[in-house]
Image 1 (tube, one colour):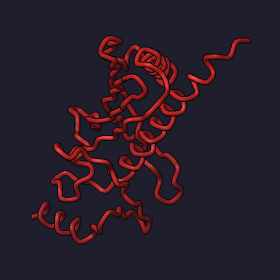
Image 2: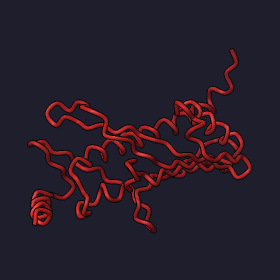
Image 3: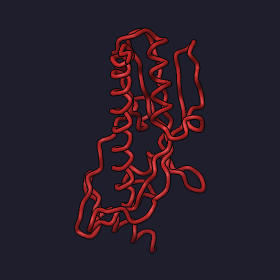
Image 4: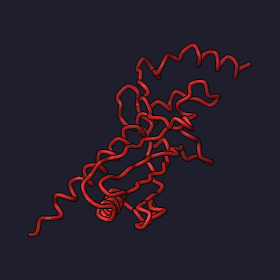
Length: 187
């Protein structure tokens, strides 16, 4: 009966795309989804000057500068196939709803990042986003308000993941384009 009452209360409090806590609300981000699997998937094909090998080298350099421990992130490097992929992590924080400041760690989100390279373009894909617990907790369950284990605290985690992934994508694009320009400079 407690579970039923809790579920009814949760459904009554839910509004489309909003998370409420102590008078504050947090809008859930709109996440890009894969059309086939309906799972969250950030991906884009980016046109960039350079052949497959040059773009691969820039991508490899980006991995080595973006991640503190690239050897623990990178799982596959194949210059012939033009692919670098790895498993990254995002530190999550519980946020004080009154001040907006970090209170304590909320865990780790894991994601898979794959970058594929061809002449004149590369494609990034960030998928398989999961909350690491005793076992992993797929992101789909964080988003779905109708999911049995949905918790309004997830709204903070979702916003943090979205913000971090978008910052990663911005950094990747900047490094991939700047590296080509600065490569010709010789001091």
